[in-house]
Amino acid sequence: QDHLFQRQDLEGQRALVTAGPTYEPLDPVRFIGNHSSGKMGIAIAEELARRGAEVHLVLGPSSYTTTAKGIHIQRVQTAEEMYQACTMYWPSASLAVMSAAVADYSPTSLSQEKIKKTEDNFTLELSKTKDILASLGASKHNGQVLVGFALENRNEKAYAQSKLQKKNADMIVLNSLNDNGAGFGFDTNKVTIFEKDGNEIPYERKPKKEVARDIVDRIVKMLYA
Ligand code: CTP
Ligand code: CA
Image (cartoon, rainbow, N blue to C red):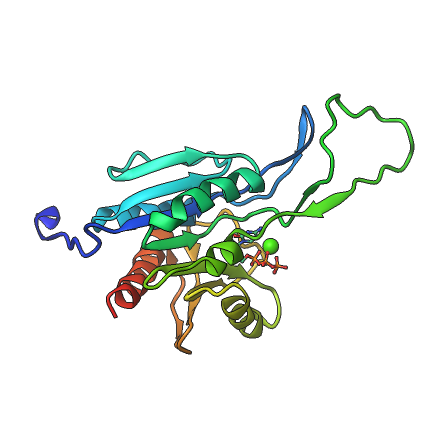
């Protein structure tokens, strides 16, 4: 039986994972969101838990979830809420995987009433959200392993490497766009992992559960290096 030989190489480790989109409200009935399914992050949370980690999953408004043992789910809506949840948990974690598709901008002001259509043109002012990955990177302590994602449609390698540096991450998982140009909503992923010591590891396209295993293998290697 497979479970009898299950590797528990993450026993005693506390892991923080973000997944899904964020929704940024502009009035009581509207928001700015994105098409992230949350599947990749959920698969990573499940793989970490399967290998013995205690997982804190900060999950945006995704229609997917998990009931796997060893995962505590904290539901959030906005980038700000996700930031608050992550900065609370990070000091006591030994690793974090930021797979959420966090909004880069949110409406500068939230209207208390439903916005009515009046003028022909309507301009919405947006303000930059806090960069969660960069902020965890800035407060990273010895031995913590911090993993981010990147999705690019040009200069992918250079952008992935610059995210590694700028955000003080230990690993960036670069998602290659699917052939039809869409990155979201698929059950498979093709990734390349960039590590801070210069390793660049390309993988074949495969189911997200298997991609999760590849990523966690690299995390374990780094954690115990
Ligand atoms: N990220 C984050 N907080 C944000 C924006 C992004 O934690 N406010 C994280 C994502 O979860 C991901 C990584 O940063 O792990 C890279 O996200 P990405 O959108 O590729 O990069 P950005 O830094 O937002 O830059 P850009 O969108 O301009 O490429
Ligand atoms: Ca972004």
